Length: 514
Ligand SMILES: *Cc1c(COP(=O)(O)O)cnc(C)c1O
Image (tube, rainbow, N blue to C red):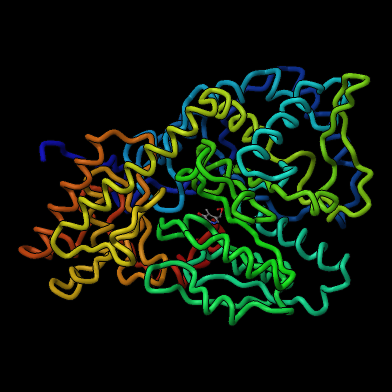
């Protein structure tokens, strides 16, 4: 291994790391020079403030940090340098689809004509934006095999919630909501699935996976009935395995009168190959910030559009974007009496929608096809190579190909050396690579969930394999090196239990704690 990785560390002598912006604050220090006109406005605002009655005025300072512009710039640049990003290196975080996001999409979303639009503008002045929404809807409907799509939800989980509200409404309209209280979710499901079902007011019924890592048909038959509102499934599932019995699964649920919800967060492995609509699904959400290339992590913004089959179209959120062929204009339709209502202000996260539109157009149907093929090739390449390394295995149907990701088990490594999946993940950081997801799905012991995506080269994958090999050698020969990792990052090993049990999430909490 020739490369050396050392993450930047900015710290002050007595501090562990870069001080907080509040700690470098000095009263009355300013970081701006306002033009005269602004000073006048400030004076005028001051005059208005004098008219506010004393009893409703804030008594204490709002406690904003007061720093100079260079202090501010350097502080955030220091933090950025101590961070990690997909633009810095490989990021095989399973289920999160951390693909490289082409800069052209950013550039287009930032164009003045797009970024300076105001959502309250009259529709006659935003015809281009409506056309873009209209066209993206058509593209996503085509990709998923659905009749119509709403762009409103702002994340995958938000899409799930919206989709489940639509499912609720469907059963309500049929007068069956009282009796259909249950949503079936496999035990390998993403955590948001049961959470969304519960938030939408349903009871969650978990069914086990079979020994080949797929839905256990007998368990599904046992769980499904007149009380079933629907099933939430992702296909390929979180093990990266394609559910070959999907048409049987679909029949089982539809025969009870329930609906099928497709968690389409990770479409990378099936883009332009199979469509959820053709597999029998009635509702689907997309994660534009995963499959359709918007930078994500750290909280967004994202977009989780939801597509539905014909019979569910009346329940979509308002407004929908429509095209009047006679007049040749796009317009908003608010008059949809059966709609579940609005789930987000205006039209969703428009910037993210623009990026997805640009991404799809730049690749075209053939490009999307290639995305799927290379994503699958990369995941299988890693699965096969890592499975051969001492201490690691590929549980569940190891003879079956994976799709967008693979889940490796470090159970043997743990049994033989005491080194856990968490330790391996921490040691990976020392090589300038982001760790895979660990301990998920829970049906795999000591799980390392690896999703390389299509944007990585064979050289990167080979380097990753050689690093895993090296970590395995270390585990068997000098485990301390792995057990105490990471050594080359800005932040060493953190206290995971304390971070989960006693998180300090704000300056106020910090002041109380320290
Ligand atoms: C990421 C993900 C979600 C949730 O998406 P968010 O945008 O994070 O809310 C749901 N299901 C699966 C399978 C995912 O990978």
